[in-house]
Image (cartoon, rainbow, N blue to C red; front, side, top):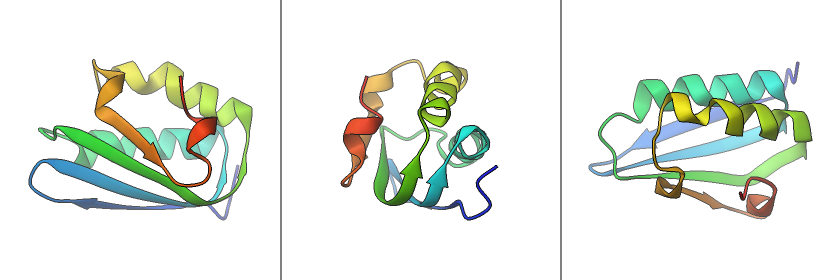
Length: 90
């Protein structure tokens, strides 16, 4: 479990912005999924900023992608930004 992982969601009218910090592992993936469930209702786009992630474990990315269908039908509504965005691309 990545004890240093944090996320900060910010919602405006039609979008949700989530800033990620620390290490991203399987537990972090579930934290992100739960935050998206809680804050991502009725938004058109979700921006996830990966700039401040230190270590990204492939298992964490896999857990995130496999559980994403729980909250969204269209993966294209996600925009990954920041220096680590390529790690989350499909």
